[in-house]
Amino acid sequence: MAVLDLFCGAGGLSAGFEQAGYDVVGGVDHEGAFAATFEHNHDAAFVEADLSEVTGGDVLDRLGYDPGDLDASSAGRRVRGSVWRARRRRRATSGTSS
Image (tube, rainbow, N blue to C red; front, side, top):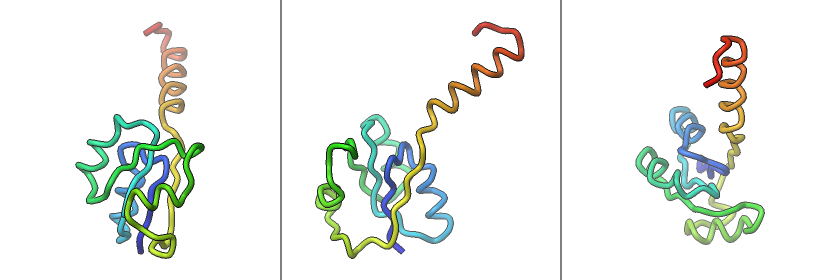
C-alpha cells in the first residue's frame, strides 16, 4: 500500500509505516531542514511545501503521482511544542531554571 506522509518532519511516522509493510512514496513538510534526514532514512522524495498554500494535486504532481496511486496518507502532529512543554515541566518540578 502506498502512503504519503503529510507534516512528515524527519520521518518518524514514515518509519512506522515502513516497518508495518507500507510503501512510503513521499513526505511533505513546510520546514525544508527536514529534507536531508527524511530522504536519508526513506526511499522517498521530500516536498517542501506549506499545505495551507498548495493543493493535494500540486503535491502529487511534484512527486509524480496521480490521486489513484495512493492508498492512504498519514499526518503526524508537530512535536516541537510537546517537547518544549515537557522540558519546561521537568525544570519546574526539579527546581532548575535551564
